[in-house]
Image (cartoon, rainbow, N blue to C red; front, top):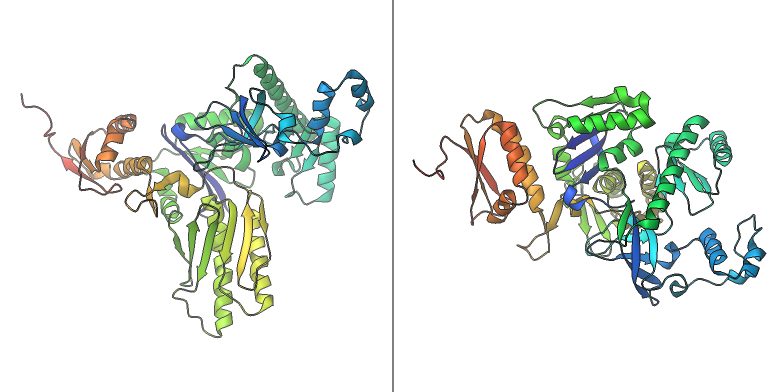
Length: 518
């Protein structure tokens, strides 16, 4: 099975596709004007405590205050440390020799948010979920710092091994190695790629992560409130860190500066993988060359056709995502039950694929076609669990009901692909979606790069909806300048009130009729 990382990097947008056998399995998108903040660490200030919700709002310097639940303020290890700082000396000594790190009997009562946080209090937090829709960021005080092989959790005392490492001998080796390496009672998780990695490499990365944590703590001491203490890697380096393994045959990127940045990163952490990195320098856009644009367009549609003629429909609601399975044009050859079973099994693979590609999270309800036999319902349910094993995000699948419904959850940390690339349609008052204005601009950019080579005139007219023209001539004017330089032609933007927002036309002009005569 061939695996590749394809990266399309420009000043205005970076797209990373993780591809298996020619099909994109994951798509990561980052835009400077709306970058993903998950993983960032901030020094914030509590602005409101909500006893009724056992939560609090914290100002971390964003437009919306971030949200923290009581369970994310302190874990058991932190609770003991917290009270060691606030209890009288006599009571501190009573707990000083607790090697097993259990909570003392006098602290068995459940904590409430008012005991831990108060308005005006400064607190160091990490973003666990970026803003989604109209909801602010979800934050936690339990910091975790991911590396290539390890995750450092300085506020806990726990050693864990990735569940994807199945060999018990290797799990035991890693646990013993990590126990020997850590000098402080920091929590550690061995990531999947740590399998087979020697102790020296693990020690080097642990030292790096500990130094990073100490620098963050030092910075927090003098930093104003609110302020950013630590920024997570950009999407390109995150993909290299999390997805670029020895199983990936090659990484291809179309940006010279991005290519050099990756090589520099690999020099530090994975020098053996440098030979697998390629710089793409062809004139054809890289996502076109790897046939990825059509799959991205397909991932924005509600209806997805199956090879048999059946189809699935994916609907996003405020509370959950529904996926409906239909036989469509498929009529089968034998019994109705066999036709339904075959459609459901085919849908399982497509559903698992689309959930991962679209990065759908939260509660998901799948409405399979009703099956009479319990054995067939179990077969479909087991097939779904098996198909989801490739997913890096944590999933939980409940048994199928007699009505053919499966409820499942998938960990959500950022916007879905649909919300990232689209926005509510003002033509239908939010009942459907249009591509966002920026996505339309970037699609035009790619189209013009693709078609300009066949145009001989020195000018290209671009007729667009007035709101798109305003964006092109304002915030995205640098994109037009870059495009003119790349294709060596002058671009004339012409607004047209009669155009649909997504509609645009381009044509050659041998003279710029907007120029004033001499």
